Image 1 (tube, helix red, strand yellow):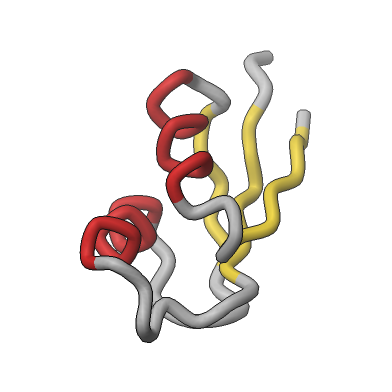
Image 2 (spheres, one colour):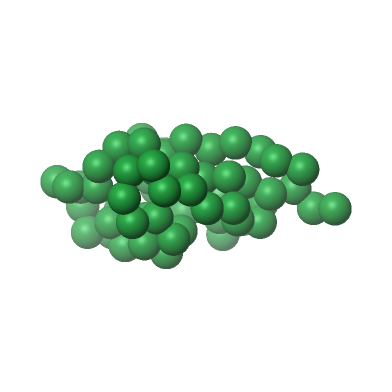
Length: 61
């Protein structure tokens, strides 16, 4: 089975750049504490890199 990433928003998107707010929305995160499970692929890794200071990432099998 392919690896997956659990992405959890831990900081507010208020006062962040528009592209970072859009990236959080693309990940499916709307508010602090929201989590989503995404496939571990290049696209998801790119999203996480843009908002790394706002999210916590865990690898799950």
